[in-house]
Image (cartoon, rainbow, N blue to C red; front, side):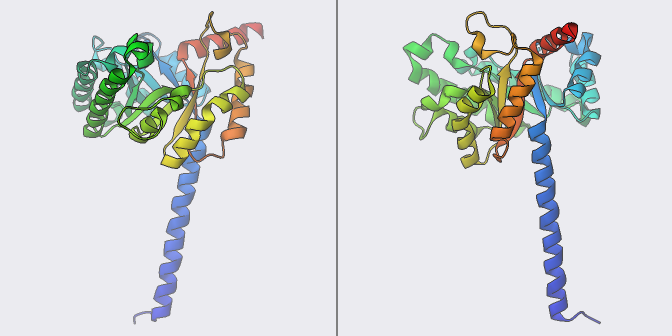
Length: 299
């Protein structure tokens, strides 16, 4: 016998409410997990061959959910595949890391990176594939940033579009590093700030908020975080651990790991309610490990 109409409607409402609640809970859980986790850069891919155990143990001990691993076309694909397979078993995502200032002027460089990545992804098992790409270009290190900025940015936009199209074709997330002061500039021919333009185009952005106090980190990151909120995009906040003789205030190399952790907790308390805050990135694995080892020797 068919159920009365009002009973069917009631059951439908209950089912929809349950589905919405479950979906909302999963989203909140994923966001909470992302906010409490870390990512870091691995610029020396030779470590995958010589120190993969140390690297994965470090990631597990420091709640690292994502590793940005430098691509070296001269390395054997099997070195990447074996490491990614082990990382996948630990629920650690591996992003293909590459980039240089020259990428802003020469589109053949990002295209070569995409060609290598395409060949790699098609040759390995599902659990040996990269989860995304992570780009670090920094065109402001070129002389053209001061002398011919607008033509430089126009060419860089073309390179970015090449990367984004390639990532989409490979069904990979595309993320990029960005300094906190990009909100002071514009992308030629586009509305809004350079930072908002990048946040809008990429699936996620890591803002290099390189300062050695939580208050300053939160301050320099707030504008880009607000832009990310408006655009509905995730934004990671990055800190530095490598020494800098010229500007020591940008790094935690001198203050050490305990102070770093306390300042990151300050930032998390201040900015953690933002739906776009996606946790911290620590630059880089080598520097982070070094200050931890230094703290261990003191203890």
